[in-house]
Amino acid sequence: MTGKEKILGEVRAAFEHERRINLHRYPIQVTCSDGDLVLAGEVEDIIAKKLALELAAALPGVNGIVDRLRVTPAQPMGDGEIRDHVRAALLQEPVLDSCAIRVWEKGRTTTVREATREPASMIEIRVDDGVVTLNGQVSSLSHKRLAGVLAWWVPGSRDVVNGVEVVPPEEDNDDEVTDALRLVLEKNPFVNADQIRAYTHNAVVTLEGVVRNETEKRMAERDVWYVFGVDKVINQLTVADGSHRQE
Image (cartoon, rainbow, N blue to C red; front, side):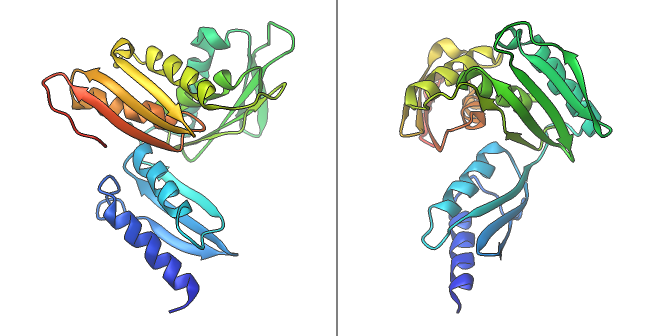
């Protein structure tokens, strides 16, 4: 067995042992290209996608990963419909109300709103085969993270590539991540953020508190995974009926 075959076997074995990665229903293709590990296929949700990437990256001998994993959309949408929903979400978000919004469509960029403050912030939206790419610049990491989550919340999105830069650059840290998490959870109308506590340590987020049901528990965890810079989520939320399970 070659070194490459050994690594591919270990990656597949790691996926098999993670119950939240359903390889039988959502197979992941694992190959090597130019020394990098390539992961491709459609996975169940953001949790399965991020876990697959983290498990693969943690294995010895894996130097780089090419991410071609896509999330099964909650609602099938064409690129134009996804783009319209992302545009509307960014335009309607009060935190981004001074930010210029542009869309890439039919080979050209169209400005749908000009920046209203200096220094000017701008987010450009592009959608290709269900993958939302955000480019431009904003004034804070919280703005960058929120824009990414808003794009993920569009039910047709299959992936979000957040290439927005923060100008001037900010040093990222656990407190920045936690602040963004609180903002995101508060904006989700299906999650009672007042009952959830989030802690971040070395990019690992722990969720504690009480939720109404398993759906809200899973939804809160997905929201955390959507946030740029989160490497792992420990879900210790308790369902109101008294059941408890650590994820």
